[in-house]
Length: 143
Image 1 (cartoon, rainbow, N blue to C red):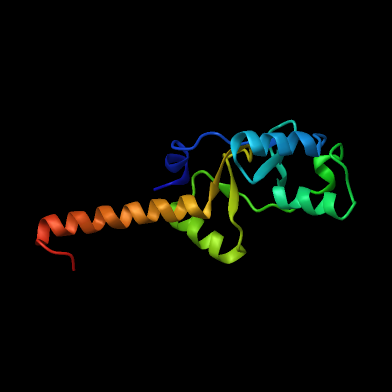
Image 2 (image 1 turned 135 degrees about the horizontal axis):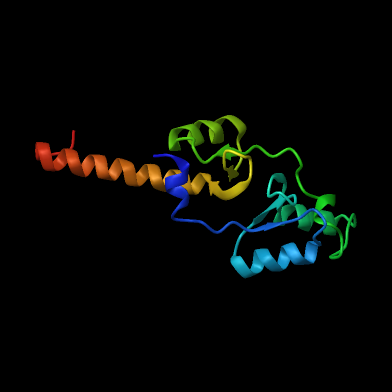
């Protein structure tokens, strides 16, 4: 399965621009029950990611205010994955770079979605269950 197919189930990605404010990001996170926002430029290319933890630490350490810009606390070097990559490619990438979420981009590098390690694990579990069910119906038992 390629990520584009998996993305059909979860098309909504929450994004802001670097000149958005912390309070806007926090409101979006609360409204949509998410822990991160992808930061994009005017052409929808990924330029960063901001997590609830980034905001909390910046505010707690006195390094920002609710009016601070997202660009002040976002992670700038963000690994992305192409929507044409397979589920197994995503699994390898998650294992290699040890992150919880990956922005998904199209062939032009524009943001089209986001995938989490939980999304990948849930899909792999469904695939394994389907495989076991098919084997059981053919063999009468699970090998």
